[in-house]
Image (tube, rainbow over the protein chains, first blue to last red):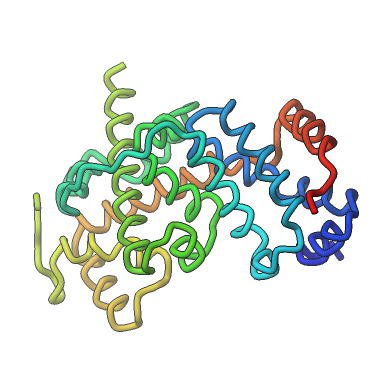
Amino acid sequence: MSVSDRELLQRSASGDRAAFDAFVERHGADVFRYARWVAGDETDAEDVLQQTFLDAWNAAGDARAENGARAWLVSIARRNALRVSSRRGAAREQSLEELGELAGFGDPEHTPERVARAAEQRGLVEDALAALEPEEREILVLRDVEELPGASVAELLGLSLAAQKSRLHRARLRLAAQLRRHCGLEQQA
Amino acid sequence: MRGEREIGGLRCSQVLAQLSEYFDGELGDLERGRLEAHVRECDHCARFGGVFAAAVRALHTKLRASALAPAVRERLRARLELPPRRT
């Protein structure tokens, strides 16, 4: 049976480096992936990754870690990512109907199969995500890639649960719109 | 909205607004039942629901890598060798 995050952090807080190494091994990829999309590029993401685990080592006894190590780590990573990211833009406010049409509502040519086929092309999903605003990328990575619960993400982002849901839904529609746009480009090529 | 219809007491724009909550399992039984009844009769919403789900699924499967690249892991290890814990 694997050792719990809580136990690894308790042992780390007592100076057990092997326990902390195991904790890094367990969560390093998640933190790097989150940082990659929030900080903007891989060099900045590596800085965020390293600083996050340094901070985690120094705060391993932090009581908040006991309530969910991944959410706690992401909150540290977020602080570090915001420090290095150069721009936090706000998406232009579009109505849901407008976003739905951009994403292909009512377009008989745009089918789930077409999206799935297009997504198989190398780099297309990454390009679509990169085209979004930073706050849209962040919530998609937290909810749909890292699969953190909505309540944790709301707390992390300082949003009400309803505002978190609304931001997530709009971000998903914007992602779907970007994928549709890329599908069109692929077809023309 | 293009092709907007009202089926089962629900308009397409209302279905669109609830898609995330539906896919995240956050709708109550009554709301979920009304949405599913609309989608069964509305080809626009059925197709778009599939498009929406395919986009979210693609994001998860394409970005969820399993491990750090070896070079990134090595640099992280090197960085974590440095500090004694602050007291």
